[in-house]
Amino acid sequence: MGYAFDTDESVRDGVHRIAAEQIESAVTGLEAAGPADLAAAVHDARKRGKKVRGVLRLVRPALGSDYEPANRAVRGAGRELSQLRDARAALATFDDLVAGSRDLLPAGGLGTVRSGLAALADDAARDPDAPRRIGNAVDLL
Image 1 (cartoon, one colour):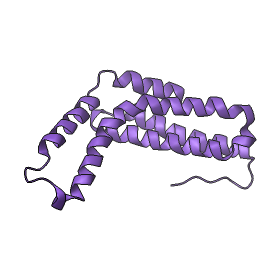
Image 2 (cartoon, one colour):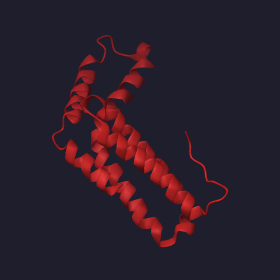
Image 3 (cartoon, one colour):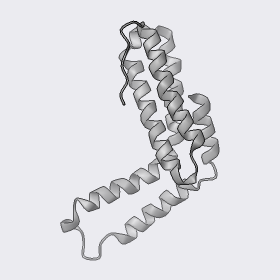
């Protein structure tokens, strides 16, 4: 569900509430994620971070000096998670492109390319640095 300002709250209070709700959900998802659902938790946390940054930009003038540190922290959290997301996103994008272009593919297909992308995505999911990256993201959030 989206977020909305309440009519009886100040802009500052509304932004704090909205950001807190989005961040709490992102942190909870990251902390609860196991290996099987890590990719989904990372994707969700990154989407929530983008929502938070969007609302911060929307009301930037009202936030004054509070804007930059909040934006920097949420952006940093997203960057910590980006490597965990990129390989899986590349595979999903490849699959979408292939599905929409079957009649344009070479006779031998692109199985080798997909296998390579899948191996990279699997490696990223088992990245021994993932817990540190997730911890850094949670700390920033």
